[in-house]
Amino acid sequence: MTTEPTETAPSGAAPSGAAPPDADPDTAATRGFAAAVAEAERLVRTAPHVRTEQDLAEGLDYLAGSIKASLHMVGAYQKDFPFFAASTGPYSKLGLDNPDTLYFHAYIRDDAEYVVTGRRGTTADLSFQVMNGDYSPTASPDSLTAFDDRELDIGPDGEYRVRFGPPRPDAGPGYFALAPGSAMLIVREVFGDWATERPGEIRIHRADTLGTSPPPVPADAMARRFDIAGRMLVARIRTFLAFPEWHYLRLPVNTLTEPRSTPGGLTTQFSSVGHYDLADDEVMVITCPAADKAVAPYQGFQLGSMWYVSLDYINHQTSLTADQARVDPDGMIRYVVGERDPGLANWIETTGHRRGYLQFRWQRLARDLTPADGPSAEVMPFDALPARLPYHERQRVTPDEWRERIAARQVAVARRMLG
Image (cartoon, rainbow, N blue to C red; front, side, top):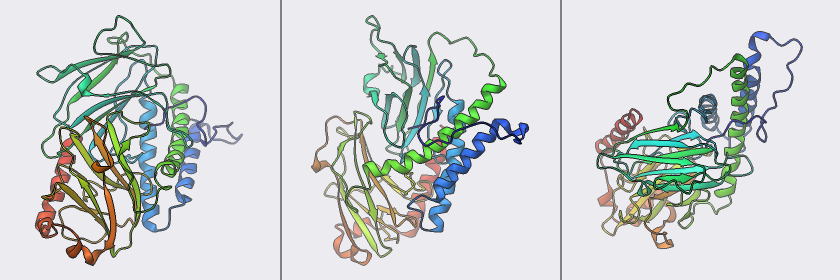
């Protein structure tokens, strides 16, 4: 999900090259990074989906978050003294980030042992995944290990300890062997009920360096970090402009796939994806069974922009978990995706985005899902909703009730970010 620093430029990244003769020595460290920022801006401005002022404004905001993330990620590239860094968040999004998830990652090496300790919170899911590299404009990294907290030995106070390292026949329980090429450990903490669930705690250290200190970083190495961050930035923009072409845009518009194991993702996660294109006077009604908690403790639906990131999920209802949605008496959740306010509890706001991505996720599964567990979609005129939407009157909300729903989202995200 994040782009790992490398000594050679990722595909499509701006080469550093030699400095021009008249280059200012006082800007030598950041010169390559500045050139990469300019190249990243060019990619954003010339992206094929940029059609409106809003498209460009969101692209520039995406660029700002990507600059911030690239500098943050290169600083987190500490395989000998690792720590968990936030992989994505409300202000540095990538990879169609899930509004219900806190993402963390640490860089690792396959020949060292790492110890992860923590305290399990009350969230719907806590999962771990080891990847062998980075996403690129032409390929996804392989998932080498993936499991959720059902594999952990969690104490009565929520405390747990898990180790990752080279294969060891005497390792015992709670030890996960790192396959050759293991490069990154990703942790996801997923909220089903934003109002009541609380995050836990998590830490990582390399087993043989705890209690010691890393050497100081010399100036030339710090300067190289800017160069690597620039390469990461350009690769990041190129990658996630190309990624939706593989998994979304080749599907028929205004449809969703059957539930399927997420490609390259968690073994305990299924997803259903699609993309939409709706006029202002149209809505898409998506009908999906509310998952049995014993089968899928977490079920979530969201929209994404053409930048392949979540829409504003703090100040608008652009996503819903099964816990947040109003379930109809027949056990179905009916989401109403559209621009105009229908006055319904399960309205999913497109916030000015005529086009975008659709994504369902089910996590911590007890069994594989079938087509019957998944969604169906129908596009209809906005004015047809009262006649064609089952339980329309039961779904109605007042303006004050809607304001309360948005306030609850704002408070919950603020609490979660400080958790």
